[in-house]
Structures are given as C-alpha cells and as structure tokens.
Length: 248
Image (cartoon, rainbow, N blue to C red; front, top):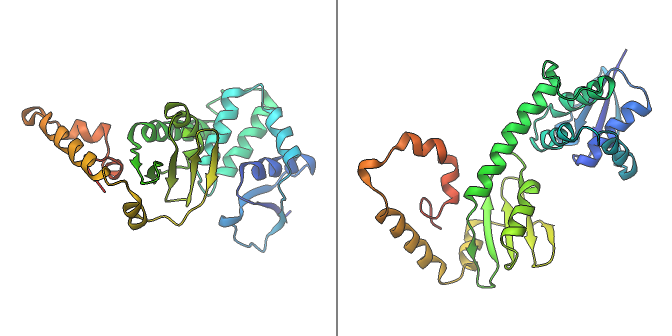
C-alpha cells in the first residue's frame, strides 16, 4: 500500500485542512508535508491540499475541549521543524480516539508538550530582550531573529505594553514583521537591512545608546560579576538585541 502524502501551503489553516482530509478520506498510511520541505517519492501518492477555512475551523473546534493540547498543536506548528506534522497528526489522532490529552507516555503527545515548552521559553525571552529604536518618523523599530516563529505569540504583549506608540517588530530570519499603527496590528514584508535602519534612525538614538552603555558600566560591580550566571540568564545569541551589548 502506497503512503498518501498531503502537501500543504505552509499555513496553520493549511495544516488543519490536511488533518481534515485525513479523516474525510479515511487515510491510514499518510504523511503531511509542508510544501517547502516536500521531496518527490516514487512510493508515495501525492495530493495537494488547498487551504479551506471551513474545514480548518471544524478541526480546530473538534479540539476545543482540550484547550492545553490545542495550544500545544499551534505552538508545535510554530516550531517549523520539518517533521512536526508527523507528531501533530499522530497526537491529534490519539487524543480524539482516547479523549486523553495528558498521556505523556504517548510519544507524540510528549513531543508536542516538549516543543511547547521550548517555544514558551523563546517567547518569554523575546518579551524580555526586544529593544526598540526610534526612527525619524517616530516609529519604533525592533529587529529579531528567534529560533522559532514566535512573532504571532508576542504581538499582543507589545500592543498592550506600547499602546501609545507606533512600532514595527521585524523577524529578519523569516522576512516578515508586525506593524502597530495605534489601532491594529498588521503583518508586513519589507526589504530590511542594518544600513536602511541606521539611515532611518532618529538623530537622538545614538545618544540614548551611549547613555545606556554608560549607565550599564557605571552600575556594574566588577567584584560581583558572575559571567556563568549572566550567560545562563542572557545567552550570547540574544546580545545582538541589547543596546548595552551591541549598539547600532
């Protein structure tokens, strides 16, 4: 029996549509693959899944009673791992069959819980380490490159925290960002690089960087510096976001 490969468009709604297709067509041997990771296989029958909002909604509603698990499904999708769909589909099948979403002895349920924990940690660090810089147009801009696609998870936090200022948070690794215009948050795509940002910065921004660096140095007590502890709480890969570590 050939394996059915369902290729979808890389959106979360597309993934849920593919899950719906598995149940609708009663497929047993099936592999759901994001189009960017798809590789043709002679032993597999390939079907392209076209995103259907109504079908996606039915799957999402079907998981409504398992709120914690449903969160794990979404966050595991944001992990962007090439084989995430294998675990997501297997976990969904298990939970809907057994009505048990907390059986961490089941490998796929456990995997989704582990991914959720990792993504939650990255989300928390992005909230802590994002630094905005003011532009000449009075729009505040922050550049990030998180390990996981956590931008959808932090948008509300920054919208609530900086409700009175326009801002852009741009994920350079994934080439998209969010723009808050004092009313709504919108997804954006830009040609963005450090030279463009530096040219757009407000003239006072460099002075703020210098003041913050001076403050950081003056309040430090050399005899109490614990580099090991510091790196545990502020890993080096986040230093590029911090004015005191890497000013633009």
